[in-house]
Length: 91
Image (cartoon, rainbow, N blue to C red; front, side, top):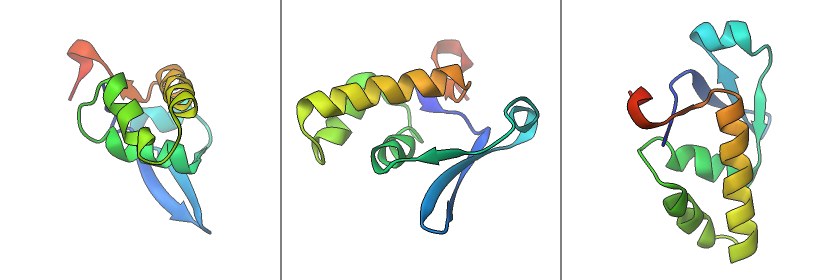
């Protein structure tokens, strides 16, 4: 999986914000605030990654259970918001 280009990351007042652009901006009215682990995952997803690679990226910073839970929750939120390209959709 890989992050879609329909969002841009900005740092505003010390917060990491994903801002929808293009057609996504018309569908999703608002911005998404990323936690520190969410920021790490988003940055990692700029390249094609597997769920296991995302977990490994978090293991550098967090313990196993939290890392696995964070990755699954983050992927679920991104899929729901249309922020991931999977399979044949990849850019």
